[in-house]
Each structure stands twice: as C-alpha cells, then as structure tokens.
Picture 1 (cartoon, rainbow, N blue to C red):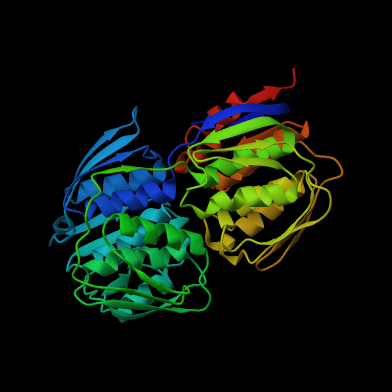
Picture 2: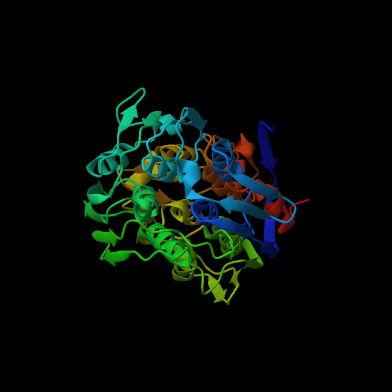
Length: 429
C-alpha cells in the first residue's frame, strides 16, 4: 500500500484512454442480474472495492458468481429466492453506497435477519430517509448504534403501498426502493418530498430496470408507480459502458493542457448523466467532439463559470479543479449532498484548494473558487475519498509537483487511475 505518490509537473497530455466500466451501472446490473432467473453474462464489468463488496455480499447468501478479472466479465446465476432465507447473517459493505443502499430495500422484502454495516465513514452516512420510506411499506428495520445511520438490521416486512421519500439527500434512496418494488406483494407508489437530487442517476436505474423487463411510471420526478408481483427478466448478456465520472479527469486534463485526449467507452448514447460534463467543458472554452462511442477534447482558453451542479455532484469536483486554470471566479451551487458523500467534500475541497493557493469561499451548499496567483506544491489529504485523489492529481498540470496522500483510495472505483493518467502525460525533465 502506497502512503503517497508525488506527481511531477506535466507539460501536456495527449493520447487515448479506454475507460473502465461504470461503477453505478456495474453494481446496479449485478444486483438486477441476481434478482433475475437464469444466467447473466456482464461484460466490461468494473472490478473495484465498491463492486467487490457487492460480489462478496451476494456470494455470502449463496449466489454462484464467476469473475474473470482479465476479461472484465462476470457470470452470475440469478434467483430472487436466494434473498429469502431464515438464518441470521452480518454483511460488511465498506463505504460502498451503491451496495449498502439498494441491499437495504431488497433484504427488507423477506423475513430474514440481516445486519448491514460498513467502515467508519459509511456508518456516518445518513440513511434515515430511506429507512423511513421503507417503513411506510411495512419494513421492520432496527438501528444497531446511532439513529439514522448504519449499522442496521433488516427483518423483512416491506410489501409496497404508498411510500413517502425525502429526496434531498441522495438519489440512491429512490434507486433502492425502485429496484425492490416490482418484487413487493402490492403495487408501489412513491411520493417525493422536497426536491429530488441527482436525477440523472435515477434515470440510469429506470433505464436498466426496463432492460431487465420492468417499467416504471415517472411523473416529473415527484411521483413514481411500479406494479408489484413481477419478475426481472435477464437480457442474458449486458455490456457496461465506460464510467463517465472517471472520464472527466482525462477530459479536464486535455482542456487544461492538451494536446488532444480521446476517451473510449462513452459517447452520444451514454445513459449516464455525467456525460453532460462535456457541455460544461465546451461552455468553459474547450474544443469538444462527441462520437458514438468516444469523446475527444482539445485545449481551449478556459473561462470561469457559475453552475448549479445538483444533478452532477461527482463531476462538480472536476469543475472545481478546472476553475483553478480558468480566468475569473467560479461558483458551484446547490451541492449540499457533497457533505454526505465519502467525506464532507465541501469542507475537504475548500481545505485542500487553499493549500495550493486558491482563494475559497465555502457555504452550506456552495463553493466559490478564485484561481491562485501562483500554484503552491504541497501534500494533498484525500480523506479516504477516491475523487479527492483523482481531482488533485491534475494540479501537476500547473507546472508544480503535487503529492497525493493515500493514493490507494482510488481503488474504490478506479484502481488503474494513475497508470492511465501517466500513460497520456508528458513530464518535465
């Protein structure tokens, strides 16, 4: 395990990147495949810490899963019956929100006794709104430590009906209920209280459910209806598109100091909302070409921007780094949910951006960034947050070296990140 990695000044970037599979899609498709009868072959699957937690959880309750890390494929024999068992078990899910949140609802369907818990950060990430919503549908859920947070024990009872969900913290709560609802005894109606965050991630869930044979009625993201007593139908083979959030770092690097960078695996038909990051790049002054299965970015003259990033909180962090290389003040708004991610990202970004010389104003749900007069070489804390490590690696494009502490945190979603970055980088001798 590397305690730190120092990246020397990068003069320019130029080249081509084959993106790993999307984490959001990989874990959703793996779970949907487990709930479908028969075999499903998943291609371009992302093997990372988050997906490993989902694999281990499914194996623990009896699923047969064949993993080929070389070919990036998974073969799983699905059966929703495997989620219905009587023995008491505990499952550790690290800090994998895309595993913890959906499994809460799935295990609530059956009269089991399942304890789900995570690492110290996961046990600080709120789940109260999800638990409250499931309880409307009859779920019996017990907090094991602190009210509103994992660890929790799931005792079954969820049968659908009228569900009321606060949507302001995480779209993963809605994703969780949507995936479980077709298997409930009754039809499910979900009424969203407050304004739903990160809508594009809900779109991913609905599109994937449709591929697996389930239709969701969606009225303006405020009301959803799903018929109960249904079965998921495996598509037999599913190809996971490249991770759009991961693409943002390479596309941003090209915008800052290209050359030209081409990322393969996403394009015009991507189902991920974060692919719209390229529109932000274009608005900031980059040269963009979007093809069917790839995106090409060339350097432009970057200018500041003011944006509501509620729908794209992950790539909003990449925008914060672009702001350092742009003329003028950049304001990123409506990002309160940064505070309940892998770390409090507003606080963490503010602290580390100040280290490199930026002038920062931090608010409850926004961050204001003025670029530094001169970049400062320093050590960057990552707070065990993979996106902090990947974002701040781009500071090396400033002609200053940067040291990333605990770089292994990228294993959560992109174990080969630094290898890929270095493959397109031309360093100062």
